[in-house]
Image (cartoon, rainbow, N blue to C red; front, side, top):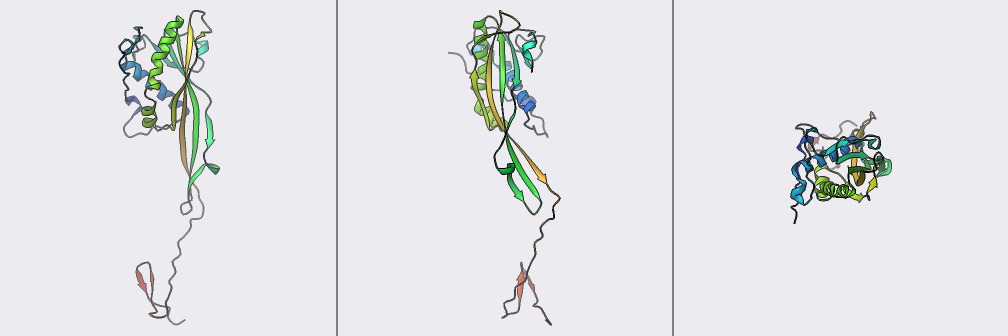
Length: 228
């Protein structure tokens, strides 16, 4: 029975005194860091896989090539097996009318919110096809086993591995094959608009009861109007 994969907190993304903003590029980088940290602490053979290649931060010593790439189809992998992290289009969804979730008329501030949603593709390349399938299964564990922890840690509205393609022939080589993992990710983007509108003023009025001829504004006793 293979050991359970170990989840490691990606400390490299946490900088004291700073705040990570979720953007399309940053989310793609988070997926890269998550996979890198997973492979650093999970020896494939110790969790039930037969291949011996292991990932290392130093690319000259790493047996697995990991990179962020947009046009990986035209680039021959320097090493095999290899993983390329790419992303699809970012889709913006308005959650409320005019994206507004809060408005403060006194300060002319409007808080707005948009839901961003996109897919991340993790392309696994290896040879022969049986090894490609096994390598993709190893990579899959990084996102399938810890999706709830990842979602909570980074504040994603959704982080879900939703697909694993069948093996296909790598375009630049008839001996290499690819398997693509698809991750569906959704995250909020909020901002505050501060206008230069006329600020509303609070007007205090004193009401007299005609008996004591006294009134109170707040907690301060005031004298009645005289000589009117």
